[in-house]
Image (cartoon, rainbow, N blue to C red):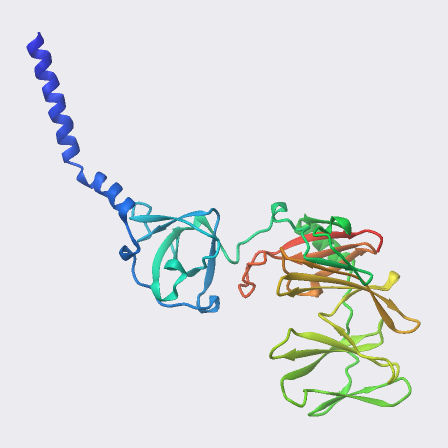
Length: 346
């Protein structure tokens, strides 16, 4: 009996050894994954600007796995990202994105790699959540006085809302300021605005140095002003509002065409800047045609496309269409979201 047991044990040991020796690839795959370097990845073209690629991807986690081919069983490297890397998107391959990865952030050492779509967000798919601190502000200026607080909570509140709520309010509260049926006369070089006293005021279509071009945008009956868009090669676009009352009233500059809450004579604009978006609220005095700034707030964690999508819900509440600050808005199907901003003691 003992001899039989010894014989059976020997057979089992030999079988186990044979099984291991028949699968050398399993062991070598583990070893190759632990020792793989970027030399295993195909050389990629050199990219310096995000405009040179169709899209950018953003990792969902600080750890990201790069594959040598679009296959989950392919050799791969798991990277600990610092947050400073730019992952340039090249194309889609099944459930992968083919990207250009710059080793040690060196464009000259670029490699093609594949990442699972489930591990990243494409730059037109980014969505904001309450965790993104929408109420964070870089600065606030309240009636001309700077406030050192870094949260919008000292001014009011801001919250994400659904698209249907926004659309319903937008439908019921049309507030676009301009009309296009009172266009001033113009020639090749100037616009001619007829003032109430019968005189003409000239507005050039370009500056003398040629760096700024001026285009007519529309007329505001509520403000008695014609709006012109000024486009400059080196500074952000802005709008100049020229009065039709008389020559002594100064032109008014806006970052964008504002929306107007006529009952309380409130103007609001929400525009992009280098550090997020800038909300400005002003009060118009129809008796002396002047403007007084009530509030200016810089939000760093979201951006906007245009003030046309800003709505006064009531005299202390604004609704706005926004997007993630890393969103590429040149994509037609980029994700848009909506917020309600309530301002206390406006």
